[in-house]
Amino acid sequence: DAEITQSPRHKITETGRQVTLACHQTWNHNNMFWYRQDLGHGLRLIHYSYGVQDTNKGEVSDGYSVSRSNTEDLPLTLESAASSQTSVYFCASSESPDLTYEQYFGPGTRLTVT
Amino acid sequence: DQQVKQNSPSLSVQEGRISILNCDYTNSMFDYFLWYKKYPAEGPTFLISISSIKDKNEDGRFTVFLNKSAKHLSLHIVPSQPGDSAVYFCAATGPVQFYFGTGTSLTVIP
Image 1 (cartoon, rainbow over the protein chains, first blue to last red):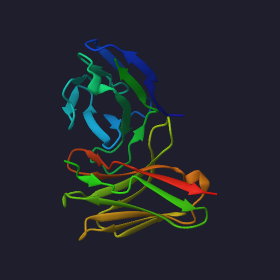
Image 2 (tube, rainbow over the protein chains, first blue to last red):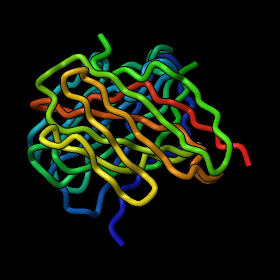
Image 3 (tube, each protein chain N blue to C red):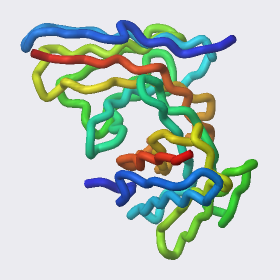
């Protein structure tokens, strides 16, 4: 069965360290997204990609970067982790280029920055 | 600035009764709306959607209503079951991205 996976599921890191969160989908979807979930804010878009070599900034992209070298993967990198980046991170993918199809979410990565 | 708002952080309902979850949005350009359900330690899963050309969409126990003039949508769950206890997010699609609300935690009491 097709799926979307994230690793690690839990991560503790120190302030200033570079951290990369992995996202892998086997749906063969062109669209992939990274969100963070925080209390009182819901899900906020960090970065998104509509295909290989395409990346775009979302509403909370500062301090994060992504790259898309193949269809299946969209790793999220925190260049220099800050305590404000402690959050739960969700990766998602979708089929439709015009956003009229639902997104499929991964199980999430809980990141703690100490 | 939150473009999609869910003003009720939590809701408790007796099993068998109707659950009504509400969502308001500010951008009249949004043309597609979705509801997601999220259990603890899991990612959100798609529940039901509605296009802006419709005012109602049903799927089993779940019905979504859209009032474009009021920029308001609601999710009705009838009858509510204990397994419906979860956080519900509404979402709207703009030209380039999804916008999610802050979520409503539904508890269905047996």
